[in-house]
Length: 354
Ligand SMILES: Nc1nc2c(ncn2[C@@H]2O[C@H](COP(=O)(O)OP(=O)(O)OP(=O)(O)O)[C@@H](O)[C@H]2O)c(=O)[nH]1
Ligand SMILES: [Mg+2]
Image (tube, rainbow, N blue to C red; front, top):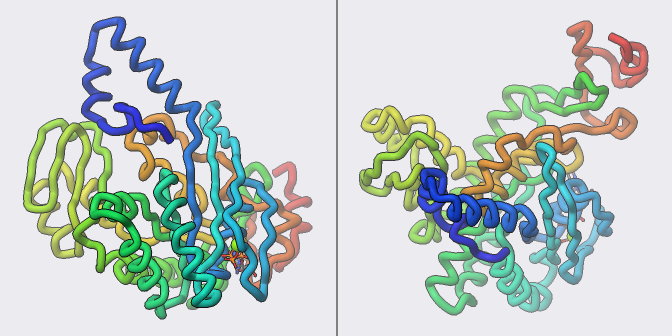
């Protein structure tokens, strides 16, 4: 996506808002329109079989081939998708890459493809499946990718674009199965139970640290806090023009200490820490996909969060009843009678007018 001052600087955005000059307002309008019409370029990389093509298909409606058994995607494949959010259309261009760990020869060939595509993209997803703690190969591939970058500036750019995605969350079941429940508009959503949610969160942190720790020097995590207008610097934490930023890796002790020193920033500091986790999702259960989109938007453009504050109702949170009926290892909660029912969707039909 083309760089624009709006994209680069929230300070500039705020200045424009303050301006009473009509030409500035026109300029602002033009830039917003330009940004809205540009496609966000999202690149999806990771090991073979981690679910990259399935994720791309589920989010965009593409129909890329997937395989239960063998390495499948051999060339980058792009699908452009129009997402309607809060009455506006956002163009999303997803580039699904071949997976690494297929063979040493293939992996070597894909390295240049990864480097080129990651640099062209606005956000680069790096997928690892839930439940995996053997992450050395993922780390090594990332290290190779960084080594093949031509300069420190390029390495920094790659790290800034990376979003770690933990796929196949539905395969994690701790104490009880996932629960399917119906929404008022007769769709179905899947939710993990408390223990599964907690384990997924811990796995998301573990995977994120495993992948990002070697590149901590390049890492900058940012969130917006509209009322944080006063600049400050406290070690690795800084605030400027409503952007709260942390350089490097946050731990829980630092989160607590910073929160005590800067109470007005406490929730932003917690958000920064939450960003330092993989985004947990499941294509099969349509779980976590809106969170992933929001993370992509925030990553790619600070200003985007203003126009995307209404990012719900994309349909990505829900499944069609007929599809959900075929899912294994789930139980169903009847939201109307507040009880668990058997794995059938007749009740959905029976309760259509409730
Ligand atoms: N349980 C579960 N399985 C999934 C999910 N997403 C993908 N899979 C399965 O994982 C396998 C691999 O999926 P693909 O989408 O082909 O994986 P890929 O990363 O594109 O693989 P390559 O093209 O070889 O790199 C298939 O059997 C999918 O059905 C998910 O969210 N949950
Ligand atoms: Mg694939």
